[in-house]
Image (cartoon, rainbow, N blue to C red; front, side, top):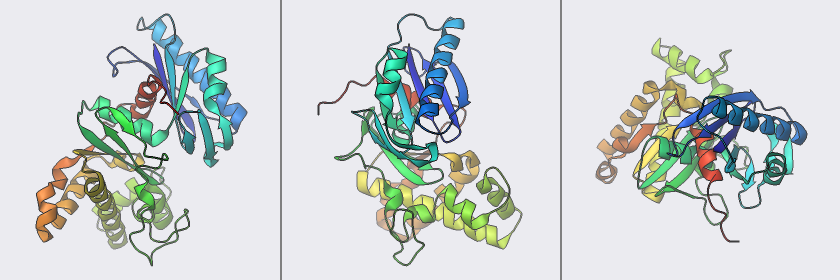
Length: 307
């Protein structure tokens, strides 16, 4: 069987998948922990539990073929090296080698957004080209063409959250000003809106629906910023489909309808944008499916690229 682990800031979502690349045989979640020792130990435990659950359900047995890991931070996919995953307490860890030794199977490590991109592509049954726009604490994208990830020359393909769109805007964590991430991410909403909800963006949209003027203004900024992300991805890569995921996508239809309306308004002002049919290219990630963990499992089965 093949395993996929989505290692997040608080939990590890682990799945075992079947031969058809999308059949989830088992799914378990464990706490992530903090620091290299804890993360490695908990990742091993999650992988073993997912494998055992799949076997108990009669869905898998025998040799563990591969393990894929999706994790935030700067990832060297070929070496299995994770750098600067600060929320996990990982400065520089050879995660792939550490887990391969403990699990007795080949392990491939991938950036979490790239892993989710691959999972969304397969779970939605897409073909051709796709961009996965991740609206989470930050903003980034992953690119898939013909079922294969495109990482770019140095692994930074899709980092559109750090494209400055307002030179006089807020200071971004990357050191630039007015980056797209500073107006279209869950982290930005949490800072601007505040509130006590687990997902401030849900509270914001509820307040906007109730007529709160400040919430309405912030909602408009967020949606227009996300629409700018869609526009950038299509104009730079001409992908056929843009799939929106990440924590903000839990808004469901309220986000998708707003995005399409924003893109349609822009199309009314530009015959060029109208010709691109942007609003028809946007879809939401399937909210009830573990796209990142499935994508990690699929990436784990990829052959290593030549150095």
